[in-house]
Length: 255
Length: 331
Image (tube, chains in turn yellow, orange):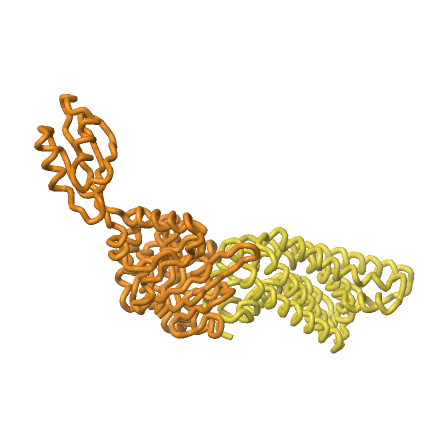
């Protein structure tokens, strides 16, 4: 465990010793802030309009602003994750530092967990940028805090899944651009799978729909904590990390 | 300390290392020599558990690389060809990271980092980013990383590449000070490197073991004949070069005379003797008796370079007689 934390700490720090961490946080903060602004403005306008028409409807901050906004955040995550994970192993392979890791007395799983946790910490920092916005809603309104927490849990689980997939892709190449590009493609594909039930409801398309990252986030966004969604994400994370460890081992044999 | 038996490593199409066996005893410095692509790095990577062997076994500090990789790694310090440094980290930070990665407790780490920085003379850059360092410094940071956990076995892939002559000497001194308690294998294609710092040499070529012996033995074995450089004074242009050459060839025991150069009124020859003959006295007498000025005479020893070229060339000539030299093993 000590070694895992050591590697995690090193990964996390190295994100902040290049512009990438600041860039991603700023990028996410900006987009999320703009999202909050438009969502709030729209809701307020709608509510004013309905008041003028004499049918006063209370604004539900959770359903009208926070829910859609965090759903939007889950989509942005699809774009952020490849940029976080692309360097994880690919860079080490390129610069040869992988030799240091693989010849040090640490187990593969310790390296993998450390790297994944390091990326996870950065992802949490990025998500943290949105908390500032949400806190403003709490300052001027009275949203229910439980669904918000559940939605964040969903974002974290979904992020963890995508990061595990990205980590796996990063082990397969020494080229960061390829690692990033392929991860992005896979993220996009997992997102598109949710469209498979749009026109037909055969078993095949339902399975595809189930595999989509996004469908499992919907419940979280609504504030529903369903164990089957949690289990889906946890097993996907495990699967991604498992693939990574297989790929790391094959590194030695192919080298 | 290190025992390699029948080690073979095959990649998809090529055989990088072909049935190599050798042993290294505790405290020795062994030079691993071979032209580029001979399989030096591959062998080292097998020893450090970076690559698994295709066939054969490798045993480091009593542990098999396949069965107990973690134990092997604990006993090994490894400096790969390109120092495995993170450019975005500071030197002290990096050493602290690698030290802890190798199992040094956080209580000891600061002391160990200071210690290796002193030994590798990198204390003056401790708070600099590694990415900003020169090649020489980076190489020494890599070396510091390899010795930080005080390993029994040090495996260094071309440790002196990219260093200036002064730094090379410092590294040599450092390696010598490490020998004794540490067993060191270093690979290089710079032959003088081996002559200076190694007790034994392992020469491999095209994946095969060519020779394994002490430096002195190798030189002796191959230096059957003696080579002498003779420079004759010809200031007034009188002795005719062909004349001199003929006269030298007539000296008893001479096998070959090669005209090297004729410049500034001097004629330089290289004279090779037959096996086991001492010809220097006779050569000198001949020159002086002929009335020429003997300007210079010195023995041209076979350098390790010659030995190396002879061995690797011979190996390539008859691939069929593939039984490599294994003298060193029997000892």
